[in-house]
Image 1 (cartoon, rainbow, N blue to C red):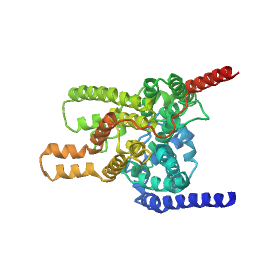
Image 2 (spheres, helix red, strand yellow; image 1 turned 120 degrees about the vertical axis):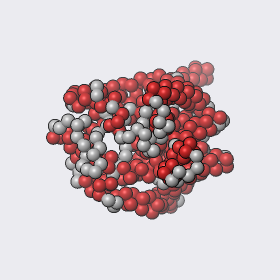
Image 3 (cartoon, helix red, strand yellow; image 1 turned 180 degrees about the vertical axis):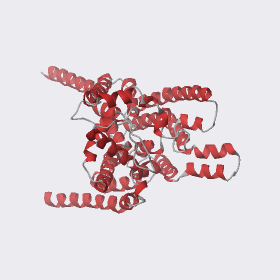
Image 4 (cartoon, rainbow, N blue to C red; image 1 turned 60 degrees about the vertical axis):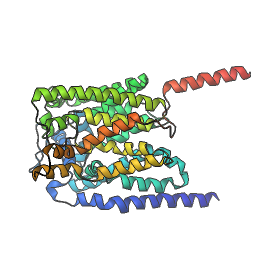
Length: 416
């Protein structure tokens, strides 16, 4: 009987892997075989940064080969992690990175859709394969393969840190390391604080600080270049007015208002979004909807950041998991399907076509061009108005363990 069960479990895992390979393989293969100078251009930046470290060249001065001419823009801790890529041939690095993206996406799906997967435990491997395949196709996730991006890794780290029922590491550490790699995940320190998890917030801050200060010891000149120079040059990231910048600031910049007006409106909008977003996240966390709270925090991060490229919306996987829940709410499933389709379609580029061909009023073209960012705003409103639904068990904090231990000891005393 046990042998039969084991064979069935293995068959389920193989079936799940087959689904992922069949569905996602063509997508990855497409971006791994397109024009050489368009292939995983961000991965080329990471790898070139690692090569710069090995030869002792300034990390924040180099540019990748034409026609891209891209600089390294992440904190110096990230370039240390990129050093192993420098030892791989370029073709091998691309294939390895594509595999790691799939692994990180799978980890994210396992947490984000935990309520649904726990409802069908026998079919969980197959269902995971289906969900990974489905989640790979919205544009923010397709762009992970297209550019060889790091966002899905950061999402996986933050989700695992916040949503795992128990962790083998000090909870908050992964958020801290993600923040040391790329600053945006630092919003989860605020999330820890507003949900009363001070120990986790401290762990995140300490983790980020140790990684950053440790890098200062290894790469002092590059660290100084970043923290006292490159960090404040948003143009290093590319044109902030480009359609791919779907943050609130990006949308305001495309309205071509005077710079002081843009700055004032951005700060005001960011404050409002952060206030209502973190309130909604706290309410969801207190109701036991940890995935919903993480989704809200991720959306806040994308909207308030000065620059949020479309691939930064990799938080969409968590959003879909939060909306789907356990799968019992048909409205939630329908909404998740609608959101999925919205981000599969290249709607912002429809706006560019409307503007270029002077079709309809110009403001309509701008609204369509800003569709992904506006969609994130609408999703925040949906989560704010949505009644939090408790799904799978949430994380266990240190205070939870202390309370549980105290309760157990009291029960023992009473029984004796």
